[in-house]
Image (cartoon, rainbow, N blue to C red):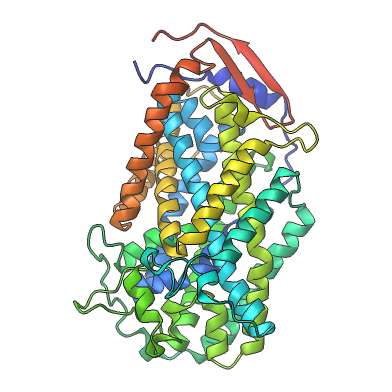
Length: 523
């Protein structure tokens, strides 16, 4: 049977136990860690795309996405504390529902992380071109070098987004030679991001004009199935702004009194970021307006579409929020704070490459673990003798990320990335329930209270947002999955280590590994 191979949980837990971590983090520390992980590209970059989908209803969209993230995060926290090893949702699914579904999750995570890295690269490019080159140096990069083709939703006269291509390749190079963020550098970047957004809120909220919020829901709550419009459609897009909480979930192993502190850290950081995001959206829309540009049928042009790009090239919309590639800096310039707007652009310019680094790191490590399990060619898990990094898979991934960043707009990339994310989160919630039934005896440092309500709510929320993505983004996931399943059946299933009777548990690239012989499953 296709669902017959389940990785032995006892072997995974034995490997994790050999590398247990010291419990040092309290609830407040975990919450601050979560805020740092969550605040990033989404709020700096996707504010414009979200406003085009929902107008002032973007504020409601942040609340919807935040609520769904909270229930998904609680499920993630339980299984991450129970199975604290590398591989994320891929490993959790492998240990509960088997190799086939684990493959589909791992394949979806590859899509999520790679496309998300492309989206961040495009977002960084907007701030680099607008703040660094144009505002600071007085250099205007020609359209054919600063945006993708108009037919793909780029800009009039666009050919390639060269800055996005370059930053993706530079970060790939850093990953290949083993450069990673230190805790101190990361802390500084977190402080820069939070300070920049706090200043933005302080300067914009006093200038808010209530009339700018009317109509509040120009595209309604539901914009229509497959349209990606309305408050819920915007929520499906700006869900991207919350991704990062899974890093908080995996910190459960290092948390004092996880049963108390994990929900404080997770729910606290998500609530803080939700309120923070709503305040930023209110400040942006309430000062310069955030109404979408409507088509002739009274429906907003799709974000990232050729039609919207043509409208944004017109003088009438040159200062519109929905047309800006650096939305928050643009708002501050429009209300007379050009210097502060540039400073916010510098903050994004400095902080966003670290997000690309984390996303590329996560994507290559998922590929790495799948390769070590025998499901992908072993060359992908080849480690460089000098750099001690999986340089082959990093090079391949970086090239794909750079190409996507060079030609596609940020809104479309975020929607595609969210499709893979929502699938993975839904499977994690199901895995929590399966593990509760299969192994009630396993030690769980953190247990979700009311799991039989919370986990189904998380699954329903993920499906709900997925069905409110644009149709193009929804189609990408099944097409990508079909390609992955074909690869699994043609290559991975026959070469799987588990299928051959060997279970290999790898904690990290340079860490310990456990080889445990088992009876190979039939079939």
